[in-house]
Image 1: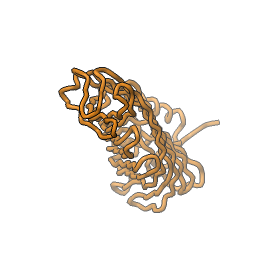
Image 2: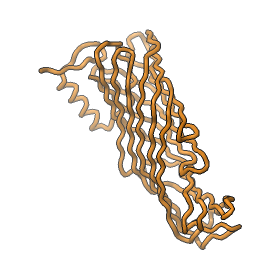
Image 3: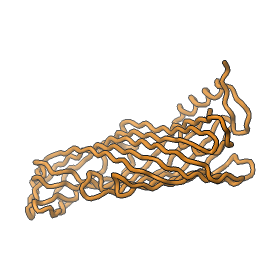
Image 4: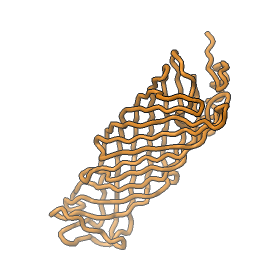
Length: 292
């Protein structure tokens, strides 16, 4: 049996050529989101898109109290800090299945990074009041984070025209984040009933599941559709007070696949009792979409 795929001009190309292009792109570190605009078909069409996202990471965290904090919650801040300096491992992959105007798509990210720029912000006293920790008291502070995100959604192409398309969608986004903070102070901090040991560390894990709705698609640049602007936006709530994601950029449909360069923003805002108070990723993303 001979396998083939359809290129951007509607011609079939051998699977060997497609696989060669895939491995060449993977070796170069390319990747990204599957938002190109193949014609509607009653047959199943699939896409896979490994990608590289290089964001700055920043956030505010609240760790549950321990003996090191005298039982009071500990507040810290991280970033903004490029995790390229501290990245230990990453995996980023998007995929899509489409039939006619209907689509199902997913996005998976796993990150492991350490030695983030970290600031001790406050420690809670017995009455729950947060006391600010002076910066000159903390001589050494650091944090490590590992996390994974999985997003699954289904969409319908509500509008398709020569200028591009519009596809509303809905789904779920899951975030798992494990964080650890360690510190060394010039002396034990004791003020207004709040206590923080001279040395200590705390670890905590958060799991968030949010329902999301949004819209994605493309704007074609020119009549042949080779160049286009992919766009994406979603907003959601659930475990989070709200979460928001948006991206846009420029893309080129080559004979073997689509090359996309965009800017991506992902934000989480939570309630006061959670580990994550605020978490933001934002930065450029490069990818290649392969269709079969």
